[in-house]
Image (cartoon, rainbow, N blue to C red):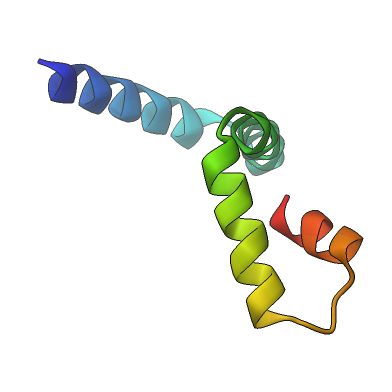
Amino acid sequence: MRDRIEYGIVILFLALVKILPISWVYALFKVLASFLYHLISSRRKLAINNLTHAYPELSTQEVCDLAK
């Protein structure tokens, strides 16, 4: 049942994205990404850790900015 609800939400979201102007879509996904970045701390920490290992020459602030 949960899968069907998630599927319905994704389909509804994609239908909405199809009818919006591209500039609105970019703004919408930027807000969504920022919201999820702050909501899911385990993924944020994983992204920062991976970027730190991939780019050791970057400062901590630059890695955090890139992860956002």
